[in-house]
Amino acid sequence: MRTPEEILQQAINEYDPVKILLMVSGGHDSIVNAFKSAECLTKWRIPFEVYHGDTTIGIAETQRYVKFIAQLYGWKLNIRRPPKKEDWYESIVAKYGFPGRTKSAHRYMYIKLKERALRHFVTHECKSSPMARENVLLLTGIRADESAIRMGYQKVITKDASRIWVSPIYHWTESDCKRYMENNHIPKNPVKEKICISGECLCGSWAAKEEEAEIRNAFPAMGAQLDVLKAIAEKNGFPWRWGQGPNMWKVEQYRKRQLTLNFMCVGCDRREII
Image 1 (tube, one colour):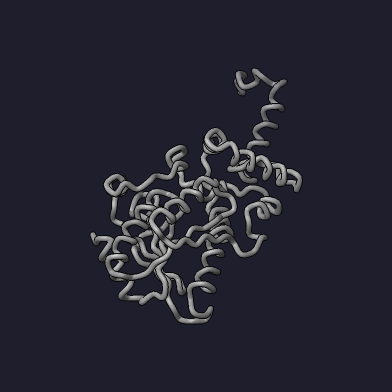
Image 2 (cartoon, helix red, strand yellow):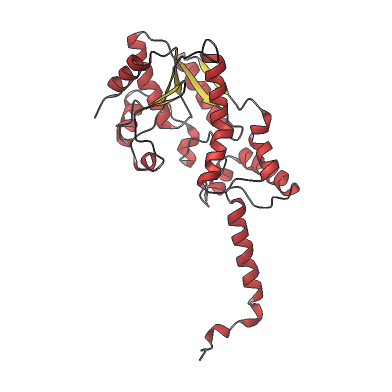
């Protein structure tokens, strides 16, 4: 297994980037990767910047944490949201309702809330011109755990047009990351500590049933925002709740109707049909 230094050095040598971005979501893996990558790049005297995506549906405390970390360590921070308001979460919910818990819904949310903002930033703010054949390194905290492999992340370096995705800590374990944070006295994200997710994106497409209750209990302001969004969705004819989606809502309604229809037939299931 290769070290973060070896992976990062290979990417720099192979792609000669015009800019290097440390991708920080606010999750602890992304923070560990940022610190480890910054450690290497500073030693090699190679400049870098930090990128944080504003998904327009994140917990405010997470973005404040990212700003705090960047200011504390003197990193230049770039925060960007989708360039078109039609791609903001409220606009999506108003037009389609809350996304469902499906791969296609998650992919759609990723493109709208994250990918377009990053693509625009790389194309128009990192390269010398939009058409220039220049590479930008994007250093992520993806590791080779089970969930990453299920999502298809099996390479430490992947080229996507001008964007070169690099995972320096790919071979690190959760214990490695925890130990690195402790040894380097890295402040933890209070959101991650409370609800076990980074909180930078609450689109709901992969949300577990109990997640909304946890969010509301820990961050009432976020709960109030979800209430506003639900009212907007209902007004436009999309009655399902956050984290449910249209398919799950239809199943739930069907089950409710079936229960109502059976009220006057309780006991029929006891009869033996001959």
